[in-house]
Image (cartoon, rainbow over the protein chains, first blue to last red):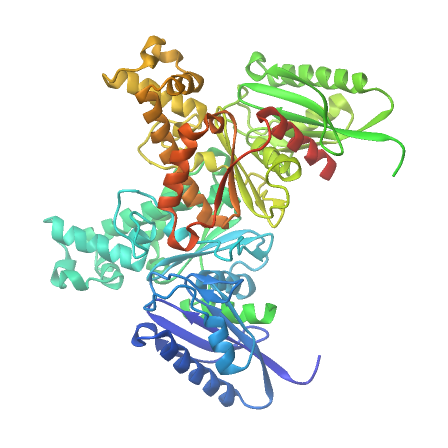
Length: 320
Length: 320
C-alpha cells in the first residue's frame, strides 16, 4: 500500500440520464455529475461533454488522489471490443461506436466498457444485496430492460462480449413492437416505456374509468401510473398486475438457465413496490418448474438507481 | 503413468432407453449394454439390474483394467446431491431419489450424477463438434428436451445443482400440457413426444390429406412423421416447419442469455435433418436480436445419440 489515495471513475449511460461519478476503493461516491443522454445529436458531442465533466471531477478531487481508470456501463456495450453496437434506447445509431477508445483519447486513462446492467450487477455484488452471492441475475427495469448475469462469482460476458440481453427475450412473436425493431420483447411490456404503452392502450381502447384519463394520453408515464395506483385507481393497479405477471413468468423462464440464488430487480419500475412486486413474485413462483419452486429468491436492489450503476461501472475499472 | 489401463463407466438414463458403457481415456467405447427404462416398476429394480450389467461389463473387461468410477446422466439429476428430483419423463416419481448413493452401494466405486443433457454436452466437448469451445448450449431433443450449458469451458450447474432445464421454458402460458404438469413448455412442442402430439392434433382437427392417416392416430410417432415427410407428405413436412419454427424462436431467446459460440442440437429429432433444421435455422436467425445476428452457429451433434450421452457421463467420472 502506498500513501496515495486512489479512486475510479464510473459512467452509467442510460436511455434518459448519464451519470459520471468518482468512487473510492471502499465504494464511497466522492462526487458526481450528470447529463441528459438525448441532449446530444452526435456521440462525439456526448463524449466531449462527459469528458469535460470527468476532468472537472478529477480536478475537484485534486492532486492527492490518483485515478485508476474509467468504467463505462452502456446499453449494448461490448466488453471485449470497447464498442457499443446497435443500441435501441440510445440516440446514436452507429454500429460499433468505439466509445472506450474515444474516452481514452480524451482522458488519457484506461477505460473499460460493459453493458449498463452488467455494471449494475457488479455494483450490487460489491456494495449491495448480492454481497457474497456467486450466481444471480440482475434485471434492470429502466427506459429499457437490461440484465447482468453473475455465474461462479464472475460477470458473464459471452463469446462475443454481449451476453445477458434478457430484455429482448421474445415473449410473444406477434406482440407489441419493441424499440429494437422486433416484436413482442419483454422490454416492450415491462420497462417504464412498456408499462406506459400498456396504459396508453388501455386508455385508448377501453371505457374503464381512471385518473389516467386526466393526462394527455400520449404523455402518460410509468410515474403517472404509479401515482394513480397510490390513489387507489383500479385501472392503474390492474396495469401493474398485468405487467408484474408478464415479468414474473419471464423470470421463471430465466431461472431455468442458470439456477440462480436470486433474481434482483433494479430501476424505477422495481421501486413501484408491491404494486408490481406482489404479482411478479406470484407469477414467478406459480410458473416455476417444480424442481425449482421455492429455491429462487426475488429481491429488490438495495442500492439507489444511479449509485448501483455508477459504482458498478467504477468497479469494472478497479478490476481491469 | 502406471502400466495399469483405466476406464470409466458411463450410464445414460433416458425416458425410453438407458445405456451403460465402459469408456477408455481417449474416448473409445470398449463395451456397452442397455435396458428399457420403463420396464422397471421401482427404482430399486432398475438400479439392481443396471448394476448387474455394470458388473458384467467390468468382469468382461477383466483384471488388467482399473475402473475409475461411474458417471450417470439422468433427467433432473442434481450434481451436488447425487439425487434425481421430480423427473417428468421417468417412471419413478419420488422426490430426491439418491441414485448416486444407490449405485455406489452396489458397485463400490465413486459415482457422479448429472443431468443427461449435461453429460451429452461434456461428451460433445471432449469427443464431438464442440472440441475447444468454451461457451455453447447443447439441446437434446429426445422423449423430452434437455439442455447442457458450457460457460468458460465448464458445465453450468447452478446454485442448487439443476441449471439448464431449457426444455421447460414456457413459450405459451396457455399452451399444451407438458409432462411436467405445467402448460406450454418448449418440450410439449419440440420433443419427439411434442411433434407426435402436433401430428395427432392435425389428424384429429383437420381434413388435410396425409399418409399419417393410415396410422392409428394415438400411435403416431416422430419416426412416422419423418417417414411421411421423406415420402413428400405435405402435412408431415408442414409439421416439421411448425416445430422447427417454434424451436428456432426459442433458441434465439436462449442465445440472449449466454451469447454462445454455438447451439448444438442432439437426439432423434435433430436427425430429421433439413426437414426440421432448415426452419429452425431460419426462425432462429430471423428472430435473433440485431446485435447477435450471424454470430451464433446452429450445429448438429457429431456424435451418435447413445454414444454422446454415455461418453459424456463417463467423462464426468474422469473429472470427478
